Length: 124
Image (cartoon, rainbow, N blue to C red; front, side, top):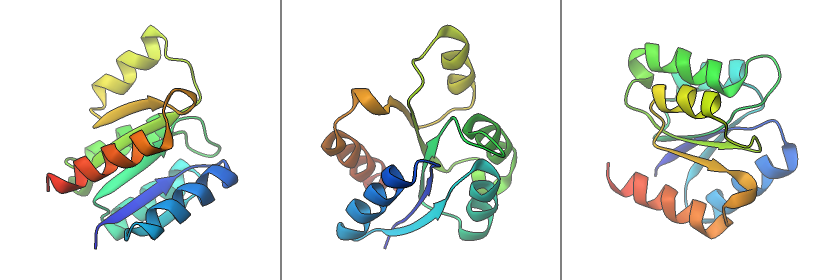
């Protein structure tokens, strides 16, 4: 069973993702900020991380940058999900951190996200 870590502070979206992914047979782990997400990524070694950018305590970009420095996080598949409209600075920072994909939540249909998750996890 593939393991997915969701790092998201919007509880309604977190619960929706959890329910949809669990229903599809994935093991789901949750974290509500980047600090907790980083701890869980290190301890749980997920196959994929769904990562929000704007969160309290530690934002998603700080978590992603820190995770990429850790052995466990160098090759972890990561999909960045955000409500931020991409600007040049955000895009440059995201690209330099090498996520698998980047999506603006309002621009992606849920089925598209699920298809991308399935595709990424099938490659392993």
